[in-house]
Image 1: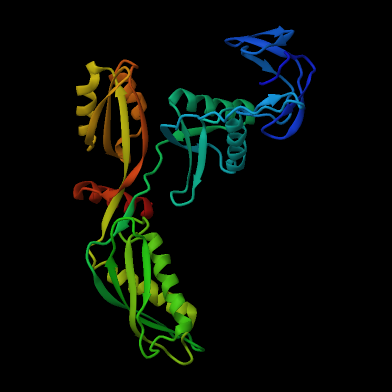
Image 2: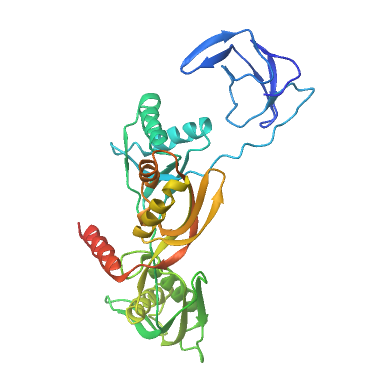
Length: 368
């Protein structure tokens, strides 16, 4: 709060961040969970004000004649992720609404609905903070939830080039469906994304049907061929095919594109990719060796070590799958004296023995 005068009970103030007026109810000084009514709060005081209708964490309150706005608070990046699942079907909207309100109170909490993994993931600074979120959802919003391990956003890609035919033919008594394409798939550099090339000559596939082939390939690539994860970083070249003057349609060529993709991708030595995170761990000197050894045991690659204010800072690349609840593990290993940050780095190929296990688990989940 910024003002040249004390903030008093019943005072009219201006929310500079939100550009609207507010009226303060009672003001209190706080000590733990206990509060004591204060006549006023002056510059430098920590206190609480009630009955503010539309003021949230990070907003600046001032007098309207002097609308000073403080710089936005830079909150730390969350380091713990958990999938949040309602215990009763139909409570998803209550969970979303409750999390929105909780985030207004605590901006270090983040949540996202991951459409690809079909989970709502909540991010925080530690297990205690997320446990408080669960408690608030039940106590204030009447919804029971549980926290489960979030799924890993694996990807699939190709290691070789191959070509194959995709032929969709169906006769149902009336007008049939006919689409016939030849597709070549080629790997692209990591991170290069998807590219479609129309290499048709002579109109063997009419131009109006070419976008449908592209759409079919992209739709099939979203589901992958190994474990149901998105196929990335490849080129699809449509170079031949045929059509029927009556039975060909956009839908028929879309189905042909899907079939062509699957038939070619199986020959392209498909592999599974996993997200790799860049981790920076800061610990006292006494724990440096233990931390480096632990990161290596998690399939991590040590990038280097630099002096920090209270010890050493160790940087490493570690698979996301190995970092679940790492904050708890690090706290235990360093007697609560270690901390870390994490950010996405890249995708890399999963070791074969682990990939086989992930693929089998995905197939089992699909069949169940």
